Image 1 (tube, rainbow, N blue to C red):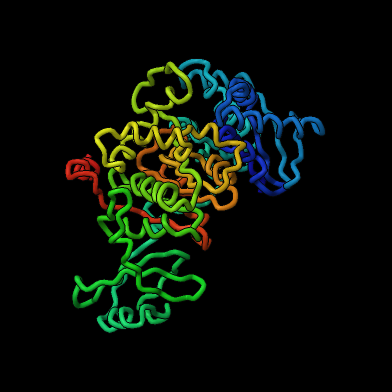
Image 2: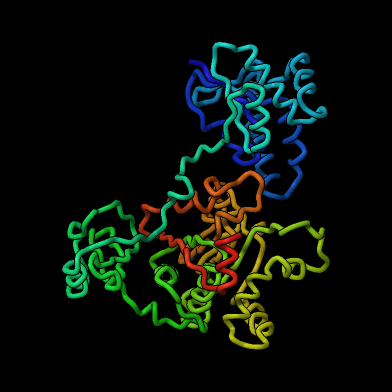
Length: 444
């Protein structure tokens, strides 16, 4: 059966190569002419949207040079791409239903036109815009969110650790032998590399053991509690999740770490403390680099005065707050400025990451839930030899309009890397910032 996919502009700005993700000779990809116009508005931007717009235009140009795209250009995967102009009568129908001659209405009119011309085929409208999908459904269109990357619902995402109930004998044997074969555990589940366990006694809930799973040996090892006694720049872990996180952050064999959790769980603080320890104290890495996407909370104040460092300062306020806490000094400003002057700490927006090759550095990406999967890929591929990358974020606090708790790059990354030995993740659930912050996170 033939299928026609009509694309909204935001899908192409989200993934400029999305037209290549559909396979089959009965698949037709329809790009409304209005979408081409809207893409043109972004092509001169230096942002990720601008780069994606230019990439999509190059993709279309290659197809146009060999085919008539108004009648249908064949793509190597067997699909056919068509640039479509809607009929006027359907455009008037759209104008009657909605306010104004806007681009969204023209795109909907094109989708209606395709459905009218191909009544016995499946026509699917793809958009990252929730309201536009609602409008499309109200017109009788099969409207869906575009996400070619199949990942779990956020509530089902890989946590990196879990609780297991076992007998007193099993826990005693673990303490005695320091390890257990995975088959000795009850209710065996699918464990991944660098998976952490809290094993509880079935008769005495207070009798527990922390353990980690060794994927290559297929065994569970008693967890080294030295991390619970660690004092990194005045910071000690306050719960098992933070102990698990420090294990990943301080392990040189783990090159990619994802820390997930709500505000106040200590994600960024732990990442910075471990980074300072391995750059300043041990010298394992030559530099601590901290980057974060630039998104304002509330109304944007517009352009900021000064050079790059001065412009960046307001956006990096949370990072400076954490450095202030870790320095344990009343005059922390001079401390982190001294380290920055010595090129041991570097703070920069993610815009400057593209094109770099980052070797022998400890790279922290804060607020990574605001990144698309494509942007996350761009960052990870910057890693050179002996570089460790730590991503932190809260998928419930997303500031970009076309991402959600399921489709953001942070969740995509941890799901894709959960089978890899060099990667690990920990989901932190217990707030430690303050009692007020924890109540606000849970109640509001």
